[in-house]
Length: 434
Ligand code: URA
Image (tube, rainbow, N blue to C red):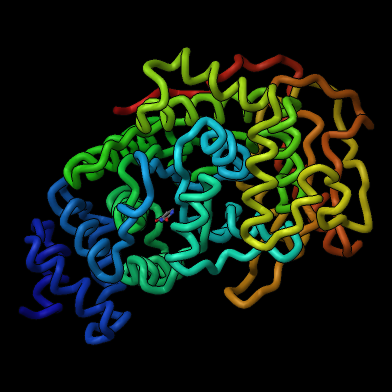
């Protein structure tokens, strides 16, 4: 078998066999097939697309390219959750302790920020001392004792995806449905959970810009999960404006804590309840959505979800005092309002641009080696549908560098569209694919 023939076949619109897909994934993972040939194949896939069968074969080849976690030592039905990536997406920080407090074991692998989107691992490091590099034994031990553990992706888990993702990132081949579906699902399948709940984002802050594409991606991932024998459900949710109000690592941690105290923003609470309900049902902890939502609300009201977060932070070496006193989280030196230049209704927010503002402030990585500033970001005062007077703050900006702050402010103002007419309210949860 030759890589050249595989590239040519796909370039001409052919369907690759499982054997051909495994050949290139194995060859690329062990360094026998060079980047330039795989880049050519990725571009051919981007234009010619992949069938459902090819996507499944690609997913399984990547899943099996490294270690597969064996979570059988954890009692109960393990439910994982994954978001396709968004702006202000701090969902795992609030949702996982809520679900764990309801009795579902959470054994989760999370990632760092990617492009304009943030990552759970970076956010968790806002707790001083927090350790994401657990051994598999510690990881399982923590889930068995306190019901929750989150670790960073190890080098041995789906290494083919790691290499391919880095390549796609620099060859303009990220936003292909089959490549995204196989990338996400290979990691989730290798991470060993019995059931997977996916949060598929749609809108200007998501990789899938249209609802049609987001639903297609959701169906594709659910199908892969089912073919692999895992219970898989996808919720399609809005990412046409940032989730909640906070964008930036420590600011998002604070918003997640506020949510566990019963003071979360409406859209964020709704997302946690919707995803959490699916997790509880998949894990056999609730018979229907109503019962599941009641249980999730109860663990917020009685404080057990907040305590679970503290227990989890503590178990992974972090300073859990910050859960009860958020002034102990990293704090920016400069906090300033961003006043609106116009009066009217906020009709649109270019969501990816808000993510980029946080990157400019230092909240994300410019290169793989960049250190991130956990304290910076933006807290929105006005979201789509809100009325704003000229001079009234659209948001507050948290910065440590005046020059970066001015640059981010400029970009922020360009991301907002203010109109005389109020736009129609959009559905936040677009649908569920089972
Ligand atoms: N997240 C992933 O893990 N992979 C993709 O391809 C896109 C988002």
